[in-house]
Image (cartoon, rainbow, N blue to C red; front, side, top):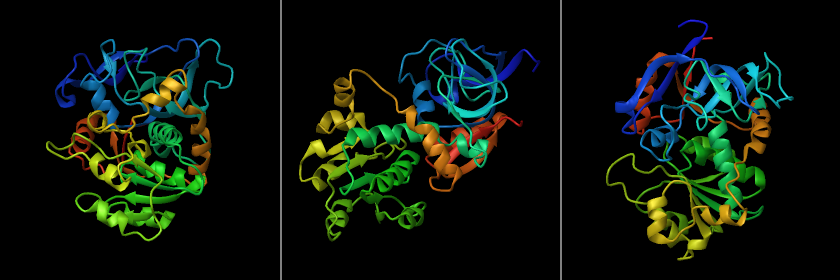
Length: 325
């Protein structure tokens, strides 16, 4: 690697991540208007990275992975006035308009928040995608203070974030999760029930906890033949599909009629991401009032180990790549 080239993980063809991803060298990206370049210190991985490899959203190739970034600003694009070279920031990598993303030595951010002094790059890199997604879907769900929400898949990182957000809103939370995060969820104030077979009966047995809103964050397609949770959620909602919204199971939603947020996008006049809340949750995380658990960190060159763990459904928290700076 020279001063004008960098390491990056990206794919040149669509397919299974293990087959199409490669670690290679390329030129450093230069920020366009409204963007900044950062020297990456940490990059969070998400299931969305693997979906991109499989062609979830058609992109010009090559395309990078790693949508969550924390690092130091090295250059600013035209029209940028709220940040300077040398500032520590975190936010989403612009994988749409550049041939690399956050899993690299340098990345381009199209939105950023200042990194609080008490928040590490590693913990900051765990936040962007889960914070944005959880905040957007809770808003789309229509949940109000004083209501009861069932968050299915509360052991996923988006679900884990959504539980904390719902509690801060003033809602009562039922969290379906396994024992990995069950104790943490209970300590926050959520009522935890085991997911899987029998969940309908377990939720109905909760005295005084009838869900007004049900949010599905459970992972899909990790294991062949895993049944959709949506029929159980609809049963808990007494057949009222309007009370159920899924973040992940679009195939199940098409079969059952539960919401995906598409109707909210149409009503709002377009797809509007909730990056406006990222800075606030960064500040809360720095104060110990919000957290996304980091399971393991990996050197950038050890990315295949992280990939294998994620695809096997064994992450048990956020997986973060570090660049050694």
